[in-house]
Length: 287
Ligand SMILES: [Zn+2]
Image (cartoon, rainbow, N blue to C red; front, top):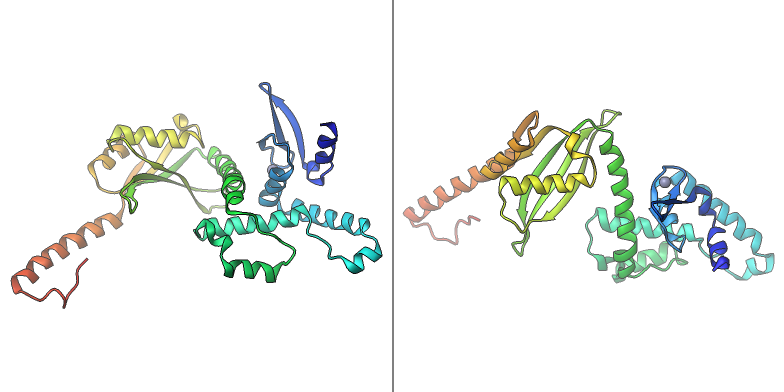
């Protein structure tokens, strides 16, 4: 056991982490951003953390790993063997693929498609792409928790935020509430974070919606001391009431649903006209 521990700790990534004990639990604390991560027996989650949050240090580690590898490889081996990728290099490619799948909203099996595998093979033949299950169970949760802790830190620095709230349904008519936060950072840049997309199974009353918003926000920020500058929603009565319960400085009715409803009403009127004039259906289409 001690050997395993020593081997694991010998990975250079451990220069940036310390094991700490808190409330009888063991955590691993990043010495760069002070994030406290869960304790794992593998170095991989910590490599992912450095690769996704601390690029300069990740570059240094890759350089160090390459130097160590070159030292270990004698000249004869070097002539006949290809130098393998280091753990950090492999992880960096994997994180880039995970980000690509996330940001471009690609399906999880994209990383198993023939064309995509061919690109990877040409770009880096030494790299073997992890399975979809590894992306789903390891890399996506790691990336999510890394992004979440980044968003938590930024949101906690704000004295108040604005939010947009919207109910919507997917193709199978499941209903969701999406909450997006907005604020201006200290560089005077507008920042937006989707706090949550929650599957709402209860009635969409103002009180239920307010509870759901507060539950989602409490994962990021102390919502009891939080001030809402602005709340944007559609014009539905429950949403207007929810907005008033949140007591923002300003409430904004989003223009898009108004336009959508206006167009819908106009087109329904147009359909009546078409029916009266008996214009054949196949000549004009209205959705
Ligand atoms: Zn860190």
